[in-house]
Length: 255
Length: 304
Image (cartoon, rainbow over all chains, first blue to last red; front, side):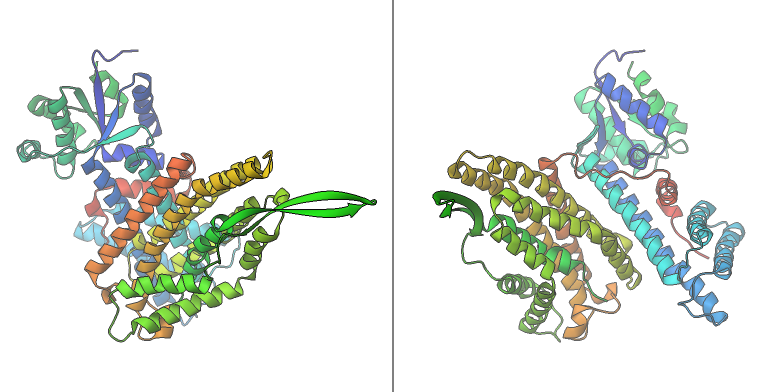
């Protein structure tokens, strides 16, 4: 097991914290947590990361809420109206097929216009139809109103738990990370941007870089962003002097 | 549509906890009883009101006066009438809640050996636990009958979760101090233990009150701006974000968020484990959310 030659620290990207909260990418996250704990290497998150996490969770929650309230509700209601079925009648396979048409229309629109991504639609489609499928499999009678309420309840339960975990870890700093409030120098931000790293990633990297410069402590920026940060990691290290890496390898960059 | 979770949950539960745990003093009653022709001294300890209790009516009216006295309200409403309408509504709810009133009385009347304070907090906790799903459903219903973002309602769910954490924390504290009190050598020590409990739990109830106030303020602000008359103010039909002044709404939301965070952090200082929740990573919703939240924000936009 290599040991860091001198004191150093890890700065963590948004996706690392979100993965830890949502238990995604577990082997990678556990590796950096274990390295941090075993070698007593501090893990920091910048203010910009904290803000981004909070914003992303809110955006995702509102996005999903609006889809349930507007798109799904509207689509099933229209189907019922067209077939003169009362809204209070239990959901049947006919309603599921109405949702199939709805999601299919989205997929077609993305294919033809090439605007947007089909991933979010596929994810929501799988979530909604699986949920409804479970209810229908259990032969549970459920109305449209109850179905929508159940979906919203699931979202509220989850997002409130995420907020608790986020506050526990970042706001109240009760977990493995500490927050660092670093004033950003616009000249450094510009030099990061020059490598085609967009906001808010450039703010996160700038924070780590400035911390390294101000304290003289070797700093490694750990991220799971393979498509816009890790693919440029050699260039970033050469031009800016900060190492960016996958959390699996973070320890080795301090050696 | 109503805001019922506000009333049974927080509008008077903080007050009830104050009545039940804080506004009490232990008293020792010494009686002489005759048994088998012999005289015995029987000592019982119980709780009495610390001072002439402020009535629930007074408390709720005072709170509504503070809320509506400082709130920007629509010109078709009168402050006094709003105070009266909302206070009357809360009082009626409280009057109907015989279960809670009986429990408060039980604390005052029961002798110390049955540990009435712990029973009282456990009653509050168990009652809330049994109603949690209903409160969650109420928030979901309100969301579906509005055009406010889901994150707005999420704060009220966080508040409910925090309130539950508070009850669990209060339970463990009351259990400890009441146990110590029940084993006290003499009445002086008994009084001391009860005073310690009040000093320990009191600041928690103060924080709950401050947070509840901000929560109610925000909910009532949204309600009155979505109502045409007093009856509707108690249960507006559709909550339209366009009816509220956005900067004021932002200010009140931010105030509520700050109070909620302070309250949660305060609970954490009492019990570091209680606030932490877990997510079920195998659950469909978690998996879907986990993948969506990792996508660039720009991809969260559905256009047909």
